Image 1: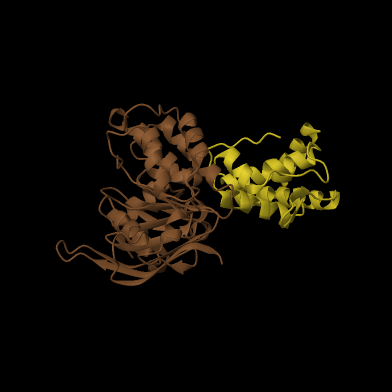
Image 2: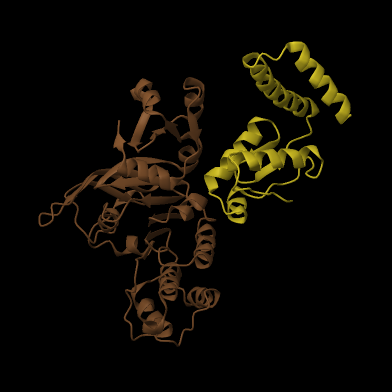
Length: 125
Length: 288
């Protein structure tokens, strides 16, 4: 398992951990039932505080990616594609919201935005 | 049973200098690291003296491992490892002989652990302590503090004299120490970059008073500094301001809720904030 922590970004460290573990789960590198390092061990490895790791584990648990049992540790949850899908959609919504905000404040028409989005979507395909 | 150390309204006045600790209250939970931050002379060492009962407090309560320490409480002292700034060991001893002394002082003294610590720190046990460099003395202090298996580690400016490479090594030792969730560390320092990495909580002291005690992540991700024009500042809601500092061309305003500020005050620059800058604003700036 690899986790890269950048200190040169405004993205909080707990978020960096959360996103990367999510990515590892979605890519299948971490499989259902795989154990995650204990919070304290991960804090030591990453040189961050325990509370930081705790926060990202809590977020992962809240979003259904992992399950934590007292005394046993944390494990990757039984696969839940719908959940992951929903999560991804929510993320896309966030970005589209920003795009819409920029569009409204800067007088970019909805048609233009839709056109741009369609263009990106096709290109990425 | 959540706090390994808890101070409630601790006060201590020195009649000669007039310096006083005023109603110091904070709590250190089990399994965590707290950075105790303040400028020189803010009262950090005095607080630690009160905690260790080397200074008698005037009022308030201090609980260690959920009980108050009295003068005869040697068992409780076994569980506390202390490292002070500077060399406090007899200078003509070497580490080997120092171990002989310590073995007689601490019931739980662990010679094997001490030897291992010395080897890890690359300290020569036959070399006289007076020939040690500052960094080596510090490491020796930490090795001694750890060798009697304490549950609470209290360090007063222990990383200040060390170079970045050595500080990184020491941080490793600290993180190792809190792998056991019954262990905690209270670390006073003015080198806040170290604390920013590993501390779970940050407590600020200024002129004998606690001005802020928060989770570190809350401080650096929720707190922020707004760089305001004078006119923007005058329109701000005073309730949102934690502290502010007027400078020649701008006013820096410390706020406690970054996302709220970004929504409420459009057009004002909102910067993330380091522990250093928070300290600077709280100490140098005016508090609203």
